[in-house]
Amino acid sequence: MDPVNLFDLAAQQARWLSVRQTAIAGNVANANTPGYRANDIEPFERVLDRSRVAMSATQTGHLTGGATAAGFAVKPEEPKHSVLPSDNTVAIEDELMKAGDVRRSFELNTAIIKAFHRMIMQSSKG
Image 1 (cartoon, rainbow, N blue to C red):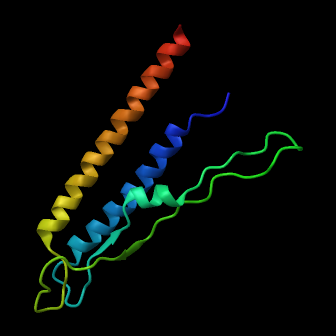
Image 2 (tube, one colour):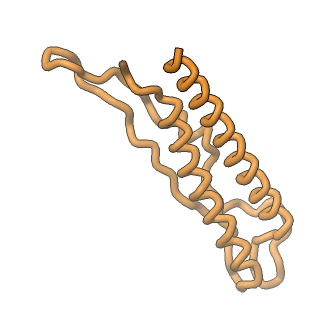
């Protein structure tokens, strides 16, 4: 039986959320740093669009292939509001909204995995 990809997808989203949480924390920490540019990462949907899943070979005569790596990195964010006189682009309100989104996404990710795990356990118990 092949492994269920839902767990891999949830783990990838958890890594993405961790990177985004780190970027948000860095923005909040540098809110008073002159010249600091706020950072964020690309949406998870774009990360998924970049990752291609292909069939993999299970025997020597099969075609080769596999899933491509879907990495993500922190990038400077375009300012959505006016830049402060110190040339800083961090808006604490925006960062707190993003932090709340990350928290809710972590909770949803965990709830989905728990439900899927319960379903697997119930089906294996018979």
